[in-house]
Image 1 (spheres, helix red, strand yellow):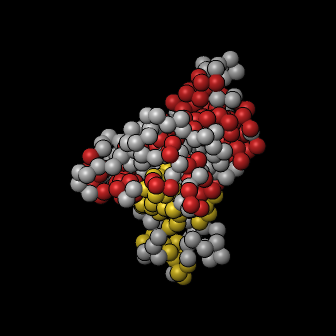
Image 2: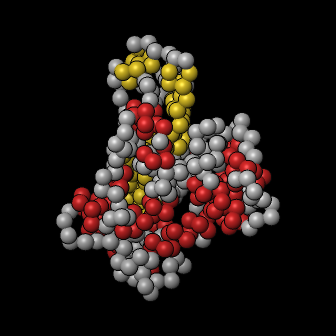
Length: 341
């Protein structure tokens, strides 16, 4: 099994059982979509076995976090997170008497936390506290009343925790935000998107491939079309590709002209931003603390959706010519391939 790294850069809080559980989950996804017939998506191990001393290309695909499919106001987008925030980014806002005080963004997938939930309540609480140090969640908050995590199976714990995320106060905004929860923001959806878009086609252009592989790809979103066109362009150029380790979506930067009390600052520079913008957990989490007098592009900050328009996130891919991939990783060998060896 590939030694997949902790997407949050936390070494699975030194929990070997959680790392094994999560890595097995990831391996299953890579196996499933690398074996999809005629898809250029392949295993990560292939890029360590390129012939001719070749090195893989590293490709970053970025997009804006604002959910362009949402039809409501910015305030409604903030409020109805599980309905509207569908770009592999979700956020929680906090307000005070003076208005918006903080926006917390996450791109962490629930599958990561499921690995800890499968092990038991104590392990799940430990990883939640790694994200939210002041959290003191109860079993009822995490699993629902009437569910006994101690007497339940690992699978039941993981599934129940996942299903309850919209009601979990440490995730639904009441007390915090933990991970992605909107129905389309799943790790499996990301793999499914790349798998479908990595099947070469002569129909149309790479830019409109997304509409040809619905529902795997949502053509009205910001994320799916750019990821899909990148994958299709790669396979039409006879490249094999994969999600780079650690698989997921990372927070890149805030765009726009930012000022505090009319003084322009580089919001992405810790030396200038007065700790107003902090990215953590290997780019999977970020917090904007709204300082007094802070504006973006001349406008006062009112909603998290407003900030999301300026937020760039990205997924990282690896690619290499099919001709230098090992035989077992090449397009067209999926049905007979034994996979990495």
